[in-house]
Image 1: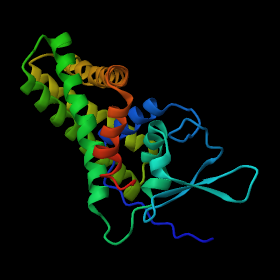
Image 2 (image 1 turned 90 degrees about the vertical axis):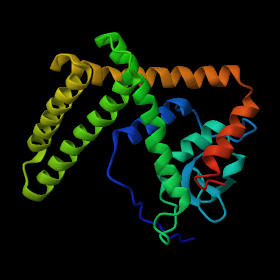
Image 3 (image 1 turned 30 degrees about the horizontal axis):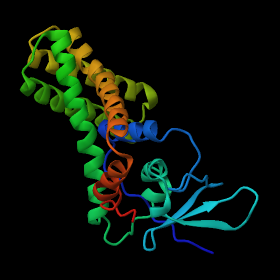
Length: 240
């Protein structure tokens, strides 16, 4: 059975999207794929049919594919499928950016960005003694824009004119210096403290996100948590 593999079209890489994928990976862990009933699925995802919302699992000891509706997967397995290439590559080519894909991109950007801003605010309070949340918003957004701009520019520069990893490393270094100067200006502190605030925000954001997810799943009923993910994430990105 032949399948048409659609080319995944993604916007320029952004660290917020990487953190989003990392957090989902932490929530899903490395356990086996499973049904919503808790029964394990032997195999790994081979393809996702965007029209029928069915996942094909390839089995090690069989040439046949196991077909499972995405709705029948457990919450952890649906979270894993959300960042799996078989789902990301299943979006139709026409239109190139359906509303479901745009929603996924927005989710991958704004969800971790909110966590980063909170992390920046906490890091700023602890390291610089500044409690104004507006500083955190300006410092976080501006800092990431500066760093991303330098990294993307030097990646393009290295790809077009050569230079390899040395050019990319230089771009990252210059970007970190520029970002540190910007953050230090926002928080009225030294450059090294500005760099420390920026780096600390990542660890704070990841820590708070992990704790928040764990507490949410412990305090709120399982059915309500799954209903929230189904309605506000999986349905809107086109998984089912």
